[in-house]
Image (cartoon, rainbow, N blue to C red; front, side):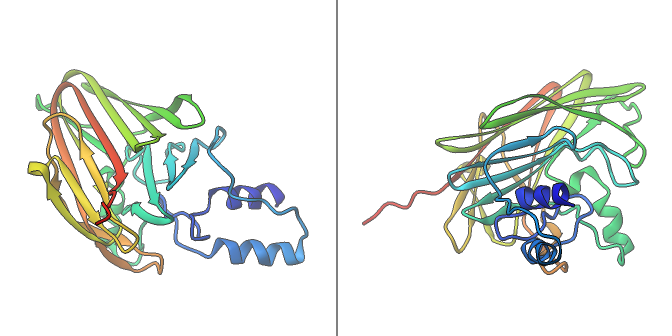
Length: 275
């Protein structure tokens, strides 16, 4: 029990609620911890800093204004599985990138959407030569942490589907400029790769000819910027909110083709100049 609640303390969201990731619903983690401690005394555990939970395949990066969770947990149990490694991003304690794959099983249509790779903050990979893509409901790609440090995790996702296979490497890192997510997809044959991003409710505008997007939030604007000549497209969906009901989720996507596709995304708070 102590280990379970120490883990819950270290991985809960900045607002003290459980992370909405994969099949999770939002619950008041701090209230649960306080109740259990009242009947089963245990040492207090803080959220702490960055940490990789190797047995689970889940890690948290915390530095400055950013709080990031990387989900590369083992696949299985009938949830969609190519949607990992997934990433959740909080800025100044408020959600920015959320997981729209948190399901409501009372609604079959949305449940089916939740099981797709595109419902998570991931890269969806499809063949260009007519080969049969991996079956999203049965494929079991292997995710592993290739390397890690105090400010970064690098995850390798390997999908082998007979005539179609690829390797996707995702590096998530924090630095003085903010958060950087680098995705590299390689395949023996040309593929179409699409980076999918889902935002918490906010106003999102495309700027710089679509190479950047600005999310306007009560706590301050945040800019998402692409390197190179790639441009964002809007792809709005629905997501589970903290009250476990569906709410609008502004979506962004980026597409690339070839045997090697790279997405280089930077996320940084917008600095407002003083008059």
